[in-house]
Amino acid sequence: MKNFIQSIIAVIVILFSSSAKAQAKSVKLENSLLWEVSGNGLDKPSYLYGTVHMICGPDYFLSEKTKKAFNASNKLILEINFADPTEMSNMQKMAMGKEPLSKTLSLKQLSELDEILKRTAGITVQQVDGFSLMTVMSLISMKTFGCTDMKLYEMEFIEMAKKKNMQIGGLETVKSQLDILGNAYTNDEMITMLEESNQNETTKLVATYKSENIEEIYNTVTDKRFTSEKTKKMILDQRNLNWIIDMPQMMKKESVFFAVGAGHLAGEFGVINLLRKAGYIVKPVMN
Image (cartoon, rainbow, N blue to C red; front, top):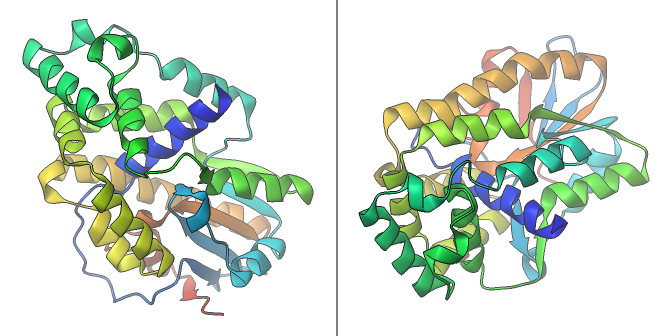
C-alpha cells in the first residue's frame, strides 16, 4: 500500500505540477537539471535540482555532479516532505474520494472514464468508484510508463539524506498541494488529460529528461489544450512565487538541496528566473 501511495503522489505531481503553458520570456537556459544558487548574502551555495518524480528503473540516473552537490548540502527540501509519516498518512486518506465517482461525475463523464479505464487498465469505473478522480488519473498514467520497476527520485533522495543524517523538509503539504490541484481543473479537463495520456508522450518526456534539456521538458509537459490562464497561474506561477518567498530564509541558514519537478525550473515564472530576479546568481552545474 505504501508503494501504491508513493506512486500516486509521484504521478499526481507529474500530471499537475508542470502542466501549465507559461510564457517563455526569460533568457534561454542551458541543458542541466542541476543549478547552483549563490550571491545575495549567502555564505554557502545551495542547489536546485529538477526531477521527473517517477521513472522506470532502467532509465533512472543520478549524475556525479548531482551526488557531489547533494553531499555538499546540509538540508534536503522537496515539494512535499515524503519522509514525514503524517504527510504519507494524509496522502493515503486523500486518495479516497469524499464521495463516490458515481455521485460526483455526470453519466457522460462516467461513460468516458469507463472507456478510458477499459482501454488502458482493463478495469471498469465501478472498480474505482471509491477513489478520487486524481487517484484514478494516477492509476491510468502509471500505465504509460510501460514498466513495473519504478523509481521515485524523491524517495531516492530521502534515502540518501537519511544515510547522512540530513534534515528533510517540504515547500508544501499534501493538503495544500492537492487543494490547489483539485481547484485548478474541472472534471472535464481532467478526463481530457486522460484521453490524451499515452505511452509515446511519456517515452518522449523521459528521453528529454535524460538529455537534461529543461526548456524542452517544459515544452513537452505543457500543452494549452489542457489548461486555461487561471489554471496556469494556480498550478505553476503562484506555487513558484510562494516557494521563492520561503527559499531565501532556508538558504541563508545553510546549504540546501532543493529537488522539485523539472517543469518548475524554466519559463518567465520558473524558479530559476524568479531567483535571479530576487538577486541571486543562478548558474547551471555542467560537470
